[in-house]
Image 1 (cartoon, rainbow, N blue to C red):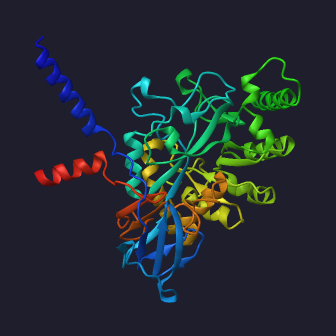
Image 2 (image 1 turned 135 degrees about the vertical axis):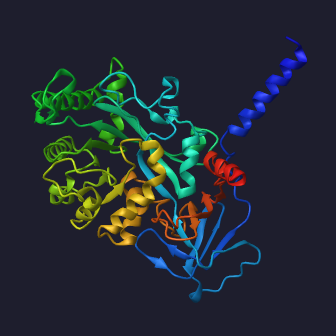
Image 3 (image 1 turned 90 degrees about the horizontal axis):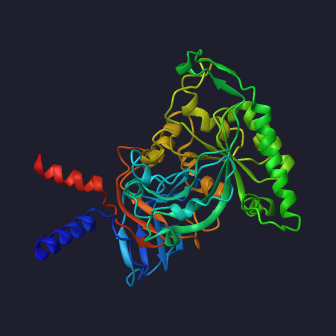
Length: 431
């Protein structure tokens, strides 16, 4: 092949790759920014109708009512947000964003590992900060997430990232925040492919599976308290849990499983979070008594049982909040990655089924930040916290009006362009 022709082909490939790549991360904030006139939703239930928000060097310096304060903003970049709304960046817990790019291509899947007990697996080192799916969630205000492994009985450790970074090191805001356990189910369904009735029946192995998990934790605790003559990476993976540096996220939905998991956590003295929690409202008092929060799943889903109310998934968050349980929202378990962009609207559904709007906002901001242990620097619009926030033309929990005009991650104004917005412009011009 002609060398010139070869170079031309390579150049075309590189240009195409650059065009298709994610938007480059924003540069560091260089000048103080003042957002004036917007309705500020603080994220803790408070609302400031006519606000002024100033941030510099990535941190919030002023969050106040404009009618009660005078500040000279002439030396600042000023954004007139009259008639608009300002929110803290939404946080997506229990997400596999950046771990899988194309479901049909095995080489792009890094969300699980071989084996049952994998507490030593770290999801963060597989996180792809340049994922196009990560890019697609930002235009709806989802600016942070907990990147979580899947599979096995103990899946591994999650980490928390912000969604504007060159690589996983830049993205990380809290590394190895918790270990994830898939609790055994007390029930199983018949295997229809073997001709068995597709009905629930007791899981005959449930007791043995719970015992195996308990024995693993007990053995790990004994190992960590001993001389460790022979290094065991699996047991080492639980060291943060027993030191109190990591939470244990237990993925469980049924009432018996939740109750047994709570007893397990009390016995092992673990800082636990329930993930999923379909039946959690039935044991809300138990969760409240033991200060155990819930990351609720499946708002836009059907009831699991014929005996359940038809709208149970829609009102589950309110049922738990009314019992005093700390609640966060995650994306749907099916098509979880592409649906992460919709978590604001799941919270909006909770509003439609009785939850106060500012209380629903907490499900994506302050509540989730508290659950993940990052509320000291994010989750609300408060002085001293990271300037991770966005401006919307309307109600951010309403699909029709959540139209972002600006978004900032740690004070950096990020691009809201995605592959989808580029296609929208392209075909708008055509048609």
